[in-house]
Image 1 (cartoon, rainbow, N blue to C red):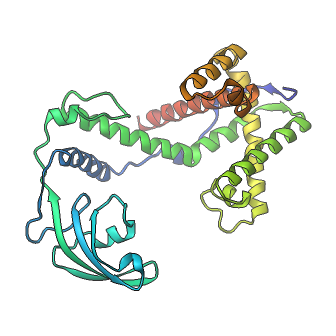
Image 2 (image 1 turned 90 degrees about the vertical axis):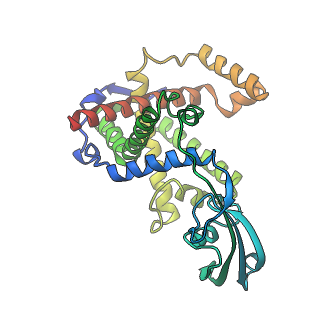
Image 3 (image 1 turned 180 degrees about the vertical axis):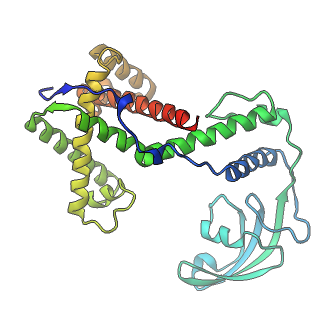
Length: 320
């Protein structure tokens, strides 16, 4: 690369606003989420039975509904569904939550009145949770539990880790990135930067076309609150982020140069592995992800992992 970074700050010294470190977890909600998870596991082993009188429809119940409406979709004599799966219609299923067998209710769906009548309700019995049930869970977030209490503890930690990640990506990541860029000194080759930004914008346009969207629609999806911005303003915001990514990439290459293997040999090994796994030719994979793009990807993933570790360290330190 022609562009260079002249000074490389230590990311562990970059200041971070206290608001990102004070997480204020809702402990009551966490406990509710844990209980809901244990109930989900137990229900998997339950038996489907006729709902007792007065049973209020809940997720997982099997329900037969009559619907009357001007809309053909909601004008059927019998609609069988398992509540919560969304296979028929999420809003429809949400509307019948809490109703009981024999109850009728009028709701508005898709701008039309719909009369719902609950014809039949079946539910699942909930057996007592056992260690065998918990051990059978194949959870992607943590190792198999040795006891029910161990599962609860691990599931709680998974929730907290998720909440931390949300806090990180909702502001802390950008503040650390911008702090690094502000503290570093660069010698940017403007032509190289311009080529990078344009190549990325072209990739965005191509991805938008593949997804059946305009470039403006696709780019709006990259931001949380883009409603009041014009397509031109959104495009400028995307370009600004790409410039930041370019500078962070320069930082990562310098900071991690002796710790990350981005050699041509490593790249070819990755190509060979993915080719064997997917059946796609090596030539096609190289075209999709050229060597230079591969290096950016590897450095980006590693520096983001380091910054998240640093964020978690500061949160732990802040909590005392």
